[in-house]
Length: 204
Ligand code: GAR
Image 1 (spheres, rainbow, N blue to C red):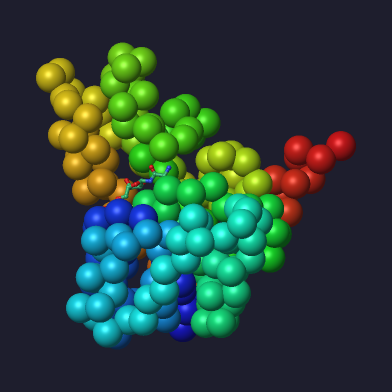
Image 2: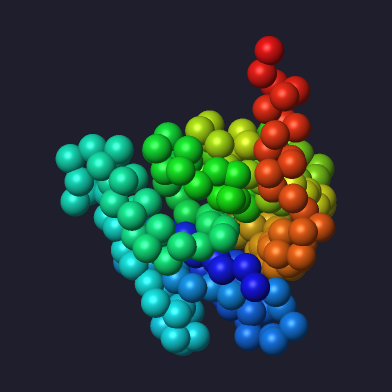
């Protein structure tokens, strides 16, 4: 059984999808804790499922590195097999990434490398993209630059607003995230292998 810590910043619909999935005995993963950088609405989902949560607010620390160290300590206290960033809207400091990678994944609402960053849906609309999507990837020290595990395409439709497109993406995203975590838990996706093969192709 794969144990997971999920990190969120917002409404937590992806967290909710994972919590729903893990309440099925046949699902091969369990969420042991939920972390946030803010008083996120999504923490209510953790509470509803009786899952403990913690909040580490960056403004309480002298530096981003100090914040990251505290966040790391809070995460590691649960000894998770995997950490899932599901709408966690902060860039993780290098020490945090080094300590957990490649057992540290993120879901992003675009087909990376297109539209990285905090406004992927808005950026896709502004660029006039006809399609966008979801990427689940390993987190590295960059902004949405780590090795891709899986992607799914979502059409951009005439008249889409940012909200409408975001909701269409999130419907696909929740399903993809639940499936990807299952595949990691069963070994169908091997994070170490993907991480190492990516390093050997990018490192001279
Ligand atoms: C998700 O679409 C996630 O991909 C995105 O925030 C949303 C959170 O939704 N993350 C990013 O944009 C990170 N760059 P949720 O809180 O309802 O799960």
